[in-house]
Length: 187
Image 1 (cartoon, rainbow, N blue to C red):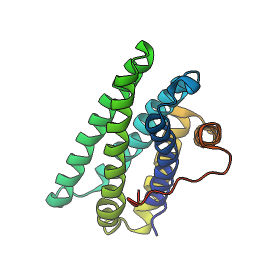
Image 2: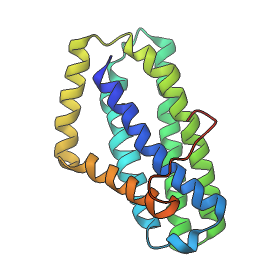
Image 3: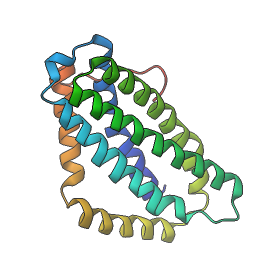
């Protein structure tokens, strides 16, 4: 078991939770009921998904792969391009929220959630297992410790707990307390 990859997968669980809630709002066209919390969801997408989670992957995990692993490096380059696309979706969601353009908001949320579900499956089912083959215990712990120090300085020691708390509160408000959305896509 790789500690660092396991924690990235844990991040994916928190991301899925917020994606499920945004998808629920979009599918049910209940934007008006949650206008006050949408900016917080956008902040979550910017800070947690883009800066924190994708930052850990791009700054720590992906560079740990030897250049000689050309096939894996190509997959990683593809994932980085997908991260850039997610940032575009987040910016569109933010514009839709600021303008209260529900069509732009809905379309951008739907595109981003679909994109991220595929992206997470690709990482967890294909790329992470291949990366794990190249990380021995010492390299894994070094990545974990280095990333933890960096993230704590950049985001604060309580950041992950705060983001998880937001995800839970967002889900409880929109979907009801304790509701877990089942996704047949496996994501």
